[in-house]
Length: 194
Image (cartoon, rainbow, N blue to C red; front, side, top):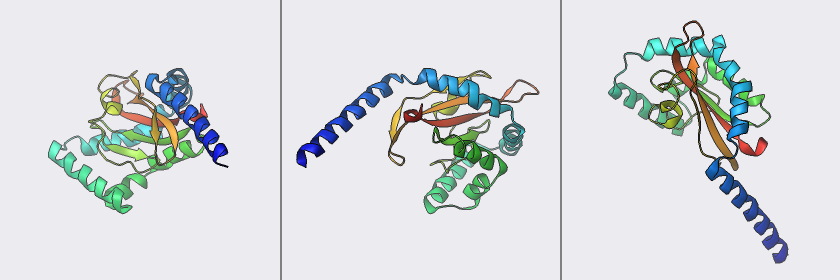
């Protein structure tokens, strides 16, 4: 019995080592890029995404850094508590329902999806994020401010909650009427499903 456990553990470690090595180089970038171009980008011009981002940009355009910090603290507290007015507003909106549908229809490929506004604040999400403000992270900084065609693929990491290896791909959300960036999207990809 102990011999079998050691063999299984050794095999598991070999798989873990192979995925960790791949994670460092993100050998999944070609598949993730293809997924972004063929499946995710078409959503970005959907009125469910564009209209929600534009509406939130109008609502949040005058927020100061102090206002954003206050909202982020509120979100974090509500996320830990299992909900509250801010979390419930975002998670209960039409965009979040749209994103949940995309995640649920992916066969486990998408582990999370969220859309941010021009300030990096959550507009909609398939799942509650740990924070409300994404504007200080690469997923927003390497997309929305960079321009309409920006795409950022993050490193592969082991996600403790789902026990899977994942990478996030992010891209700029563009207003189809003007061609101007209005926000960003991030999609968690379960690389074991690619």
